[in-house]
Structures are given as structure tokens and as C-alpha cells.
Length: 167
Image 1 (cartoon, rainbow, N blue to C red):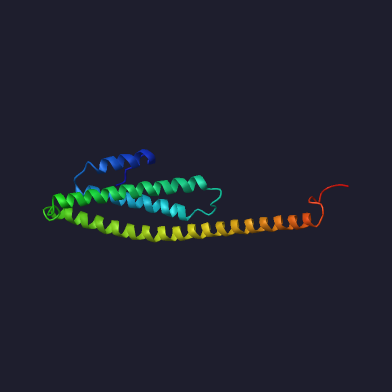
Image 2 (image 1 turned 90 degrees about the horizontal axis):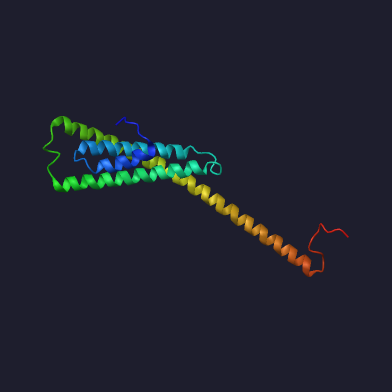
């Protein structure tokens, strides 16, 4: 759980490794790690103040979140396959392993809840920023149309188009 790996290589290695294991507790541990990384990326994205100057950071954080989502989905599918292949797999496990699975499942549930809350907060903030930018663009367009209208009116009245002309 505490292994540190090169971020970019680590994601894909983890994605490849999660398909090889058949131990439910290992898969749950990998799923918990993916949720923790997702939550960390979401928290970092939420803490970005200046959207304009941090575009690369935002793009890398969104990419990290997408990678984590793919890992979580693949692990979820793999767990579903294991349940279909061996419906009584968990009941046949030793008590210690079942307790570990219960503990990991609870931790995943908590992490998923926190991630969902942070993610929705972050999405709302980004949506507000998007709306602000859209409204600003609309105001700029309206201002440009107004300037065009004034220039056209002045031209039709026979006045010079350019005010800075010297006579």
C-alpha cells in the first residue's frame, strides 16, 4: 500500500498488475490506492486559485484523475468477474482475510464518499468559472458590436472614420 513508484509508469504498471492477481484483498488494496490518488488529485485541483496561469497543472491533474478512474473501473470489473466465477469465494476465506476485506471495503467506501464530495465541489467551481468566462466573452462581443455600430453611424453621417487623422 505504501509503495512509491514513478507516477506515470506506476499507473500503467498497476493497471497491468491488477489484472493478474486473483486475491480479492489485493484488488481491494489497489482500488483503495487508486481512490486515494484520485482524491489527492481532486484536492490539488480544488486548491488551484489561478486557472489562467496553471493550465498545465490543471491538465495533468485531470489526466491523473482519468487514469485513476480507469484503474478503479477495471478493478471493479475484475472483482465482478471473480464473484461470478466463485460465488462463495469470500465465505471460504479465513477469518483474518475476511476482516481485512471488510476493513478495506469500509475504507474504500469512505474514500469514495470523500472523493465524490470533493469532486462535485470542484466540478461546481469549474462550472462557475466556465460560466464567468462565457459571460465575459458575451460582453466583449456586445461591446465590439456597439463599436461597429457607432463607426457605421459616423461613416454614414459623412464624418471621418478615423479620429486620429491629422489634417
